[in-house]
Image 1 (cartoon, helix red, strand yellow):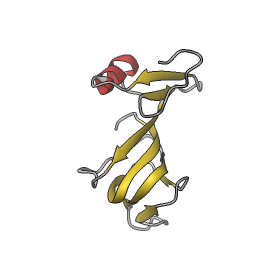
Image 2: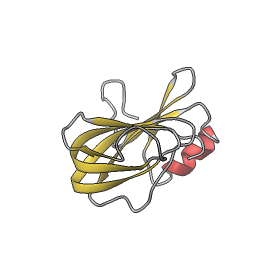
Image 3: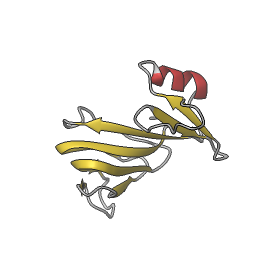
Image 4: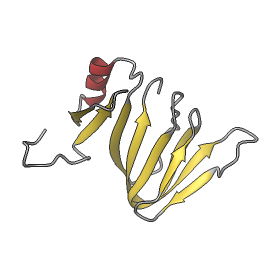
Length: 130
């Protein structure tokens, strides 16, 4: 992590918050996901703050069974598609195309992105069981 006078950037340093609200910055390296697993185990009671840039549709769907996920648009244009259960109130697709727009994906809902233009987004994710 940069020295005290140089701020970290969200594209090179993600942050893990524990249940007490303590923040732990972790540099994004090729071994990031393994390091995350080694340091935090099953990620119980923790949140990951991360950012990703994507130019194509996500190749897979994802789901977070232990909490809602917050996704905020930094730049670009994409539709967040959600596989909501029958009877669930709310949209099945949300277009994020204005910087600052965000969506909350309910706990346990599978979701993916369909990209309209290269996009960057900020994520606050409860990672346990993901």
